[in-house]
Image (tube, rainbow, N blue to C red):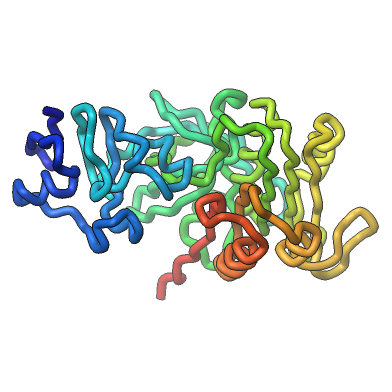
Length: 325
């Protein structure tokens, strides 16, 4: 019989038991509700072993790739080491600041060299730990198979304790502490013919820049459309690099969108509105959203109404912390 290792306990799982039943029988608590694989409350992470595919139905493919499954639907065929999603082992490493460059007036490109092994996928996020205990999350713009350094795009926020520290005090050659990587907003190799729509605002371009390059360099053949929005033209960045990618890869299209003061080579209006107006049927598409929380929330709903399946919509909203009093 397969065994389950969870919270330093080992439990044998009988052939007619699910992981949830076996753990509950042993007195180990796992969050659950419907017990029918619908609510996904009992989501767990297999850090060792492979859960059966039948226990992963309805989950995003990025979660499947990382070993997540539904405990109420899982009758394991091999031994598993388990944890709850919030208890997953988090990598922590010091990283040296190799390079700082302003991509526009507010957004800083920060390139870091980890002092040790650090695995990630382009589009996930890491956390930077400031020595005073402050922690903030930043999406990864680099691609591990292409870039030797981890790249983050850090926007300077008014009264932002972490962003002010990174912009003004952290210098090249200094060290910062990283933890992560987390998140399921990344490109999955496999079906290279699916169309992809990406919509981002401000520094929300960072994970999308990584996802686009991951897909293109993996040989993705489906259409890839990236809409990047800003209130003013000066808020855009990496325009030359994105236009160059569009010239080199005919399946990729880049649309810089500006609300106010658009120039001839810009789309006039909000990136999400323009994107959905130009793609009215998103059935079968993968959709990636990153930026302001309200934009992400409304666009996720509208993409679903346009035919995209919810498991195919990957969202990474920016949740801003309240400034200290």
